[in-house]
Figure 1 (cartoon, rainbow, N blue to C red):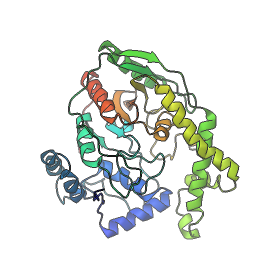
Figure 2: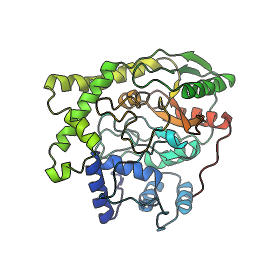
Figure 3: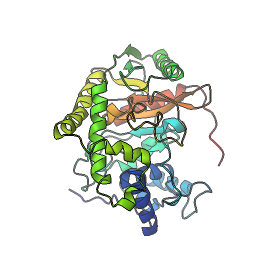
Figure 4: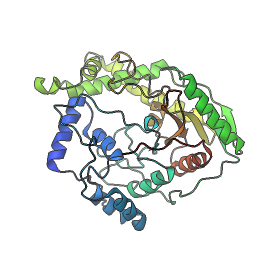
Length: 372
């Protein structure tokens, strides 16, 4: 198999700073880098990376992106990565809360080093077309990810797909977690009606996520986190966000049977999510049950005992490995973006993008982007 160069090149000083931040926040280094790269490509100097990937993709389109991003420019004021001493928590950067397009590809579609079940990275862009273009560059197998998929045998879509004739499932209640905000439900249902008016068939889908699944994953993740945090020297552990420290400590005394049962809920979620889609073409549901919450909070309830109620509409599809795209479908009365999530069958990444692109063309006018 051809060896692929998938290196992310960072200045040594920047890499050390990122490591310190990741340790203080209790997250993996690659997770922190993924968030930063997705939104600030030029600030993190990924030019060399994109030039390498462009040799295996559409070179002229790739170079157009690089020229647009700029070369060697300093970050705009406010975009700098703060020092570990000044940083208090990782920022909320999700696509749905910023009204942009975000794709979680099929598990293994974009190589990750190191790979892990449920660990998926994908682009966040302003348009579906840009997401597809970026996927044509980064969705190339790499031998360092032993779970990476082969390259997509077809081209990434550059235009909307046909909506007429599609069977869509509408899921407004996942079954557990935080209740879906009425404004979010209304916006997602309006998006479904819009697609229905374009010729799709929309059917209700029953809730499938259980509290046992969510709590089991919570226990497993606590234990996994404590295995890392508990091994830190005292002076480094003191820099971990107190919320994360308290949450992870809940896993240090769990029995092997409890941890194994928690781990097994990963597969239980995957089975339930796959069956929910069944013979339908795509699922429509909220990207999150609530709008953006105060950035100062580590989680909406600020309760380490109940940390995951806001991720229940997206978590199952991380576990199942199904592709899912988030696209803005409206705004709350307070002006906050609302995300519509489109979930497809495994390996149908182009399909979810084609449907998202079709919706993008027919959705109500969007508010202008903030001036920078």
